Image 1 (cartoon, helix red, strand yellow):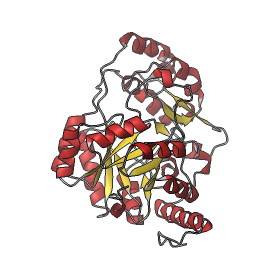
Image 2: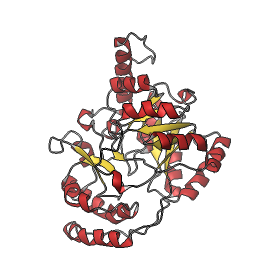
Image 3: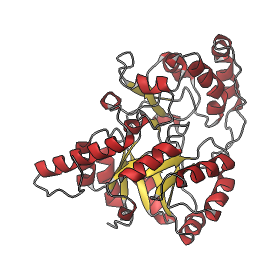
Image 4: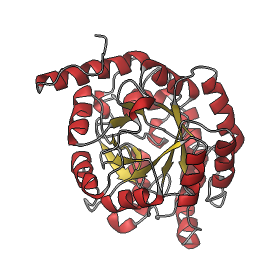
Length: 363
């Protein structure tokens, strides 16, 4: 298997792109400077805001980093279902003294415009979520020196990414926090145990593709990174672990909830966006999740104001508290220290299996 990505980082540690503000330039730059691979998230931002974040990050580090794009989504397949869900949320809007957002605010996330920016101002890595780009897009990025990664949740999706010309796949297990990066938004899969655990998924994907694998899903410790590498990955991607770092742009209430006993478990839900996403179970998820239609990003646009109002009111019960299954293992460490700690743990796990230290981590 090619190791074409390994020159991008000292340690096989990738900071996940987390849309919504957590993956800010300060966090991504700090992770890259510490020897990992930091990522920005373009999701829900304008092309201009995305470009400004790239400029800010480049002012903080000259190390490699990545940018994540959301793939365009199909038109709203069920306007009546979206309208009915809006009626259901009317009480939430009244409670938080805000209005529901326009569900038809756009379904392509300015994909073409963002691609144009990245082709004119290339970054080291671009990753994609919610689908696979065309070969023409991946080839165009390759011509400007950008390496490409496609998020996948099944062997078939991984094979599609390889055929399209992706340099690597980010294999996302069902343990992962935030949105599942599936190509399709199929409600038949919700709650049916269809999602695969990370280690099983890595093993399956290796049978289908020869391009490098980045492992994502519930990883919070260096020993888990070691397990992912042993299964066939070249690096591990961590989101929840970095979300609580002081450099993260996540809301303070979100950070605190990661280890708050009040939020003891996670579930996949469509309540906030219309796509399955893993978060801490709270009131909003319990009350509305069972009724949310499989329509994305329409529901995201509709609930955006509610979530912001809940945060402003200091009410985590109305927020989207995205978190992986390992959230209780979150450590409130500066990002540099977290990368170093993970690297030490990784070397210790490898040493326990009889391997020589590889990453040169400083204890």
